[in-house]
Image (cartoon, rainbow, N blue to C red; front, side, top):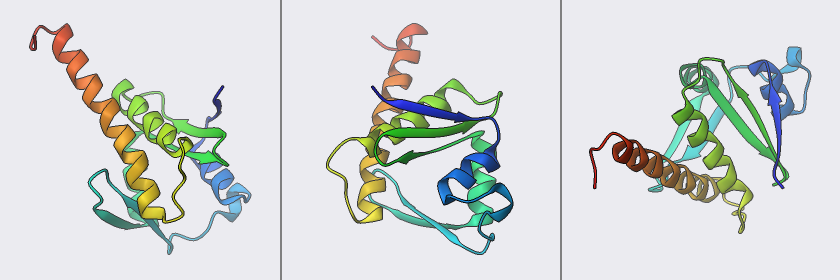
Length: 130
């Protein structure tokens, strides 16, 4: 059974990720690195990452391959929430890659599968496919 810890506040979720108090979150000078499903590597400043998170209204991370920690705003779109959760489920699945980009690429593939399934389901329900 996968455990989920929901946060009502984004800063609390980020502080839990950094294992610090909310008022001790690292400065905005750091970088966030990630890779998409096709292996393209990306890096964002902390400001860019936080801006992206606020636009998505959702952010999550996995703790020791056991607990999904998640924050989402009340106005988050269901599609986005499912996509983010699928990404985290990708991190939970083995094997775990020590290279951060390979690990992010693996998780992004799960995200892509979920998004494709949601797109197909929407089209089927709207009579656009099949």
